[in-house]
Image (tube, rainbow, N blue to C red):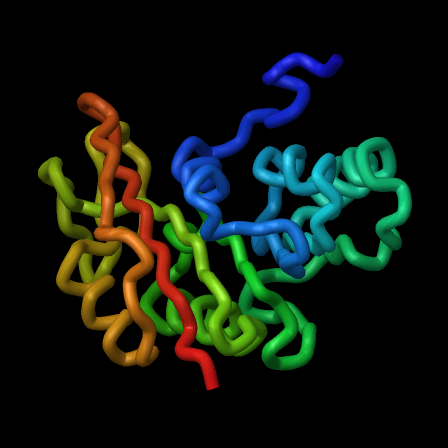
Amino acid sequence: MPSLQQQLGQIDIYFFDQILRSNIMPGMRVLDAGCGPGRNLVYLLREGYEVFASDQNPDAIAQTRALAATLAPHLPAGNFRVEAIESISYPADTFDLVICSAVLHFARDDAHFHAMLHNLWRILRPGGLLFCRLASTIGMPHQHLGGHRYLAPDGIERFCVDEAFLISLTTKLGAHLVDPIKTTVVQNQRCMTTWIIRKPAD
C-alpha cells in the first residue's frame, strides 16, 4: 500500500483542503497552470482525474509528463504543454478546475498579471473553480517599489496583492469567493495568500 507521501506527493495543504471539503471532485477536468514538476497533481493523477498541465519551462513539463506516465499512463502526453499562462491555448470554457499555485506573483507588471488572470478565467467553464496562491502584503510590511511590485523581507521582489485588490478582482470578474481569503505569514520572509473563486454558472 502506498504511503501517505506517495499518495499525496508535495500537495499544497490549502489545495488538499478543497479536496477534503468536496469542492474538488472526481470527474472534473483539471488544468494546473504553471505546474512546475507536478507537485499538486500526484493525488489527482492517482485518483483518475482528467489532468492537463502547462508551464513555460520545458524541463518542468518533462517532469510532469514522466509523473503522469507513471501514475496515469492513459493520459496523452499532449495534455502537458509548454505554454506561458497568458498564452495557454485551450478553447474557452474547457476546465472545471484551474490551479495556479505560486505563479501569478511572477507577473512583470499589472498588464502581465491581468493577461494571465484573464486567460485563466477564459478557459474556466461556467461554475468552475479557480484556485490561486500568490504572494501578498497581507500581514507583514513590504518595501513598495511601485505599482504592485514589492520587496519582501526575504529579499525577493514580487508582484504582490492585498485584500482590497483581490476583492475588487472578484467583483470585476462577477465571481464569488469559495472561501474567505486566507494568508500564511512565513516569519520574517513573505506572505502567501489563497484566493479561491467560482465562475458564475450560465
